[in-house]
Length: 191
Image 1 (cartoon, rainbow, N blue to C red):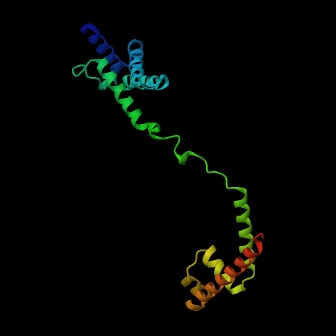
Image 2: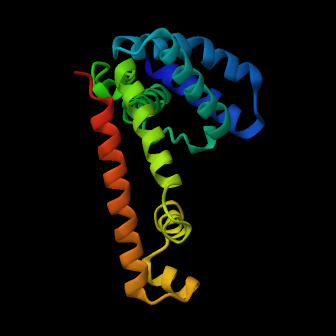
Image 3: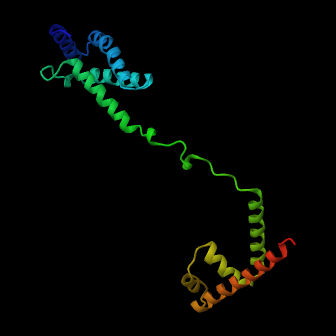
């Protein structure tokens, strides 16, 4: 590029900065946009990304032409530096290349086997049946402790029962549950 071209482009940039000269912008766009796009494509950007960054660079020229200083660099150098920096920003934002599509995190969980689901349903039925056989005072303490998450101290305060009584009733309830469920499991075993 000749010195006369550099000066001409600098005067066009000044016209954009001072008067928003659309014809000056059109001339610079027609000259630089294809070159910036080709430069970005050589840097391994796909056509969509290259086009997007090219548009961004040209918008910087339109909106921030006042920042261009011909004493520091040519207009071409300024625009290509902006393009390079935008490409670097894009690469920093795009971390998809760091993701491994074969990572187990991205695979759906295997469905639970039917026999395991059936076993879980049977176990749940046994637990519900065993809970129904508990005395009301034990059932209420178990429900509040394990379904509502209340501590033994909170149960003692709420019910007015001594802490030792709360603990022993819960322990008795679990003993009964264990016996009932174990007996049911022995009955379910096939010969």
